[in-house]
Length: 109
Length: 121
Image (cartoon, rainbow over all chains, first blue to last red; front, side):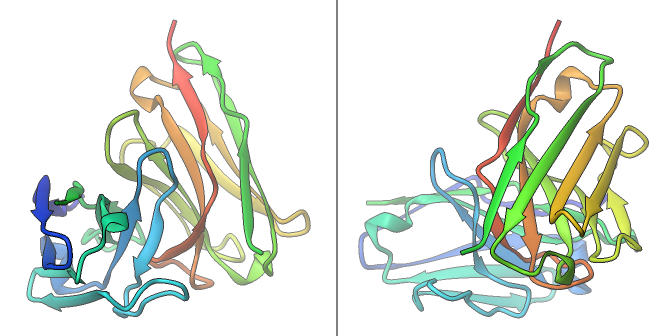
Protein backbone atom coordinates (compact mmCIF):
# COMPACT_ATOMS: atom_id res chain seq x y z
CA UNK A 1 0.00 0.00 0.00
CA UNK A 2 1.09 3.58 -0.62
CA UNK A 3 1.96 6.14 2.03
CA UNK A 4 1.01 9.76 2.48
CA UNK A 5 3.61 11.83 4.30
CA UNK A 6 2.92 14.99 6.29
CA UNK A 7 5.12 17.19 8.45
CA UNK A 8 4.51 16.19 12.09
CA UNK A 9 3.94 19.73 13.35
CA UNK A 10 3.70 23.32 12.22
CA UNK A 11 3.00 26.55 14.05
CA UNK A 12 1.38 29.76 12.86
CA UNK A 13 0.85 33.16 14.43
CA UNK A 14 -2.73 34.21 15.01
CA UNK A 15 -4.12 35.74 11.82
CA UNK A 16 -1.29 34.53 9.63
CA UNK A 17 -1.31 31.91 6.86
CA UNK A 18 -0.15 28.31 7.16
CA UNK A 19 0.15 25.63 4.50
CA UNK A 20 0.03 21.95 5.37
CA UNK A 21 1.35 19.54 2.78
CA UNK A 22 0.77 15.86 2.05
CA UNK A 23 3.04 13.92 -0.29
CA UNK A 24 2.58 10.56 -1.93
CA UNK A 25 2.82 8.81 -5.27
CA UNK A 26 -0.92 8.07 -5.35
CA UNK A 27 -1.63 11.81 -5.35
CA UNK A 28 -0.49 11.99 -8.97
CA UNK A 29 -3.59 9.96 -9.89
CA UNK A 30 -6.19 10.48 -7.19
CA UNK A 31 -7.88 13.32 -5.36
CA UNK A 32 -7.35 13.91 -1.66
CA UNK A 33 -9.57 15.13 1.15
CA UNK A 34 -8.58 16.91 4.35
CA UNK A 35 -9.79 16.38 7.91
CA UNK A 36 -9.47 18.40 11.08
CA UNK A 37 -9.43 16.57 14.41
CA UNK A 38 -9.50 18.35 17.74
CA UNK A 39 -8.56 16.58 20.94
CA UNK A 40 -11.20 14.11 22.02
CA UNK A 41 -13.38 14.67 18.96
CA UNK A 42 -14.16 12.79 15.79
CA UNK A 43 -12.53 14.00 12.57
CA UNK A 44 -14.26 16.73 10.56
CA UNK A 45 -14.11 16.99 6.78
CA UNK A 46 -12.80 20.44 5.82
CA UNK A 47 -11.89 19.93 2.14
CA UNK A 48 -13.28 17.21 -0.13
CA UNK A 49 -11.62 15.53 -3.10
CA UNK A 50 -12.74 18.32 -5.43
CA UNK A 51 -11.13 20.97 -3.22
CA UNK A 52 -14.57 22.08 -2.07
CA UNK A 53 -15.48 23.11 1.45
CA UNK A 54 -18.46 21.35 3.03
CA UNK A 55 -21.22 23.52 4.39
CA UNK A 56 -20.18 25.29 7.57
CA UNK A 57 -16.44 25.20 6.93
CA UNK A 58 -14.98 28.74 6.93
CA UNK A 59 -13.61 30.05 3.65
CA UNK A 60 -10.18 30.53 5.22
CA UNK A 61 -9.66 26.82 4.48
CA UNK A 62 -8.63 25.98 0.92
CA UNK A 63 -7.09 23.05 -0.90
CA UNK A 64 -4.75 22.69 -3.86
CA UNK A 65 -2.63 20.09 -5.58
CA UNK A 66 0.47 19.83 -7.71
CA UNK A 67 2.14 16.65 -8.86
CA UNK A 68 2.54 14.27 -5.92
CA UNK A 69 1.64 16.91 -3.32
CA UNK A 70 -1.65 18.23 -2.02
CA UNK A 71 -1.89 21.21 0.31
CA UNK A 72 -4.32 22.60 2.83
CA UNK A 73 -3.98 26.34 3.40
CA UNK A 74 -5.47 28.23 6.33
CA UNK A 75 -5.52 31.94 5.50
CA UNK A 76 -5.86 34.03 8.64
CA UNK A 77 -5.54 31.24 11.19
CA UNK A 78 -7.76 31.46 14.25
CA UNK A 79 -7.24 29.99 17.71
CA UNK A 80 -9.97 27.43 17.03
CA UNK A 81 -8.00 26.07 14.08
CA UNK A 82 -5.48 24.48 16.45
CA UNK A 83 -5.89 20.77 15.77
CA UNK A 84 -4.49 17.74 14.01
CA UNK A 85 -4.96 17.67 10.25
CA UNK A 86 -4.98 14.56 8.07
CA UNK A 87 -5.08 14.07 4.33
CA UNK A 88 -6.79 11.01 2.85
CA UNK A 89 -6.59 9.59 -0.62
CA UNK A 90 -7.03 6.43 -2.56
CA UNK A 91 -4.23 3.92 -2.42
CA UNK A 92 -2.26 3.50 -5.63
CA UNK A 93 -2.69 -0.28 -5.61
CA UNK A 94 -5.60 -0.11 -8.04
CA UNK A 95 -8.14 -1.38 -5.54
CA UNK A 96 -10.66 1.00 -3.93
CA UNK A 97 -8.66 1.20 -0.71
CA UNK A 98 -7.70 4.37 1.07
CA UNK A 99 -4.87 5.69 3.18
CA UNK A 100 -4.63 8.58 5.61
CA UNK A 101 -1.62 10.80 5.89
CA UNK A 102 0.60 10.70 8.94
CA UNK A 103 -1.02 13.83 10.35
CA UNK A 104 0.13 17.38 11.13
CA UNK A 105 -0.34 19.10 14.48
CA UNK A 106 -1.10 22.78 13.91
CA UNK A 107 -0.38 25.13 16.79
CA UNK A 108 -1.74 28.69 16.65
CA UNK A 109 0.54 31.05 18.57
CA UNK B 1 -29.58 15.98 11.34
CA UNK B 2 -27.22 13.20 10.33
CA UNK B 3 -26.37 10.88 13.21
CA UNK B 4 -24.01 7.94 13.37
CA UNK B 5 -23.81 5.96 16.61
CA UNK B 6 -21.31 3.14 17.00
CA UNK B 7 -21.69 0.33 19.50
CA UNK B 8 -20.12 -3.00 20.37
CA UNK B 9 -16.69 -1.92 21.58
CA UNK B 10 -15.32 -3.93 24.47
CA UNK B 11 -12.27 -5.36 26.22
CA UNK B 12 -11.58 -8.69 24.55
CA UNK B 13 -8.84 -11.31 24.57
CA UNK B 14 -6.51 -11.86 21.61
CA UNK B 15 -7.84 -14.36 19.09
CA UNK B 16 -11.48 -13.70 19.92
CA UNK B 17 -14.17 -12.07 17.77
CA UNK B 18 -16.22 -8.92 18.15
CA UNK B 19 -18.96 -7.29 16.10
CA UNK B 20 -19.30 -3.53 15.84
CA UNK B 21 -22.46 -1.80 14.70
CA UNK B 22 -23.26 1.71 13.52
CA UNK B 23 -26.84 2.94 13.69
CA UNK B 24 -27.59 5.81 11.36
CA UNK B 25 -30.34 8.36 10.90
CA UNK B 26 -31.02 11.69 9.25
CA UNK B 27 -30.09 10.73 5.69
CA UNK B 28 -31.00 8.20 3.01
CA UNK B 29 -28.64 5.43 4.07
CA UNK B 30 -28.71 3.43 0.86
CA UNK B 31 -27.62 6.45 -1.20
CA UNK B 32 -24.13 6.45 0.29
CA UNK B 33 -21.05 4.33 0.72
CA UNK B 34 -19.87 3.82 4.29
CA UNK B 35 -16.51 3.26 5.94
CA UNK B 36 -14.83 2.18 9.15
CA UNK B 37 -11.81 4.17 10.29
CA UNK B 38 -9.81 3.45 13.43
CA UNK B 39 -7.43 5.35 15.64
CA UNK B 40 -5.17 3.77 18.22
CA UNK B 41 -4.89 5.90 21.38
CA UNK B 42 -2.56 8.82 20.72
CA UNK B 43 -1.98 7.76 17.11
CA UNK B 44 -3.16 8.77 13.64
CA UNK B 45 -6.16 7.72 11.59
CA UNK B 46 -6.20 4.40 9.75
CA UNK B 47 -8.76 3.50 7.08
CA UNK B 48 -10.10 0.02 7.85
CA UNK B 49 -12.80 -0.84 5.33
CA UNK B 50 -15.37 0.60 2.96
CA UNK B 51 -18.60 -0.64 1.38
CA UNK B 52 -20.57 0.82 -1.51
CA UNK B 53 -24.25 1.66 -1.30
CA UNK B 54 -25.35 -1.74 -2.60
CA UNK B 55 -22.54 -3.82 -1.02
CA UNK B 56 -21.19 -4.60 -4.49
CA UNK B 57 -17.83 -2.97 -3.81
CA UNK B 58 -16.07 -3.85 -0.59
CA UNK B 59 -12.46 -3.19 0.31
CA UNK B 60 -10.20 -3.65 3.31
CA UNK B 61 -6.94 -2.25 4.55
CA UNK B 62 -4.00 -4.63 4.44
CA UNK B 63 -3.81 -4.89 8.23
CA UNK B 64 -7.33 -6.34 8.55
CA UNK B 65 -7.82 -8.14 5.24
CA UNK B 66 -8.90 -11.74 5.80
CA UNK B 67 -9.89 -11.10 9.43
CA UNK B 68 -12.55 -8.37 9.32
CA UNK B 69 -15.83 -8.37 7.39
CA UNK B 70 -17.82 -5.24 6.66
CA UNK B 71 -21.54 -5.41 5.92
CA UNK B 72 -24.57 -3.19 5.80
CA UNK B 73 -28.31 -3.60 6.25
CA UNK B 74 -30.04 -0.97 4.13
CA UNK B 75 -33.44 -1.93 5.51
CA UNK B 76 -32.24 -1.12 9.03
CA UNK B 77 -29.93 1.80 8.13
CA UNK B 78 -27.04 0.10 9.85
CA UNK B 79 -23.39 -0.72 9.20
CA UNK B 80 -21.44 -3.56 10.79
CA UNK B 81 -17.88 -4.74 11.21
CA UNK B 82 -17.24 -8.36 12.15
CA UNK B 83 -13.79 -8.52 13.66
CA UNK B 84 -12.19 -11.97 13.90
CA UNK B 85 -8.83 -13.21 15.16
CA UNK B 86 -8.30 -9.98 17.05
CA UNK B 87 -4.78 -8.87 17.87
CA UNK B 88 -3.44 -6.40 20.43
CA UNK B 89 -2.57 -4.05 17.56
CA UNK B 90 -6.29 -3.84 16.71
CA UNK B 91 -6.79 -1.83 19.90
CA UNK B 92 -8.29 1.48 18.82
CA UNK B 93 -11.29 3.73 18.67
CA UNK B 94 -13.39 2.59 15.71
CA UNK B 95 -15.31 5.27 13.83
CA UNK B 96 -18.16 4.79 11.42
CA UNK B 97 -18.08 7.37 8.60
CA UNK B 98 -20.47 8.34 5.81
CA UNK B 99 -19.07 8.85 2.32
CA UNK B 100 -20.15 11.77 0.17
CA UNK B 101 -20.89 9.42 -2.76
CA UNK B 102 -22.68 6.15 -3.40
CA UNK B 103 -19.53 4.30 -4.43
CA UNK B 104 -16.22 5.00 -2.65
CA UNK B 105 -14.27 8.20 -2.22
CA UNK B 106 -11.82 9.75 0.20
CA UNK B 107 -14.40 12.24 1.50
CA UNK B 108 -16.36 11.30 4.60
CA UNK B 109 -18.68 14.08 5.69
CA UNK B 110 -20.22 12.62 8.84
CA UNK B 111 -18.61 10.59 11.59
CA UNK B 112 -19.77 8.87 14.74
CA UNK B 113 -18.12 9.47 18.09
CA UNK B 114 -16.33 6.14 18.00
CA UNK B 115 -16.37 2.94 20.03
CA UNK B 116 -13.30 1.63 21.86
CA UNK B 117 -11.99 -1.84 21.20
CA UNK B 118 -9.28 -3.06 23.55
CA UNK B 119 -7.57 -6.33 22.75
CA UNK B 120 -5.66 -7.62 25.73
CA UNK B 121 -5.29 -10.74 27.82
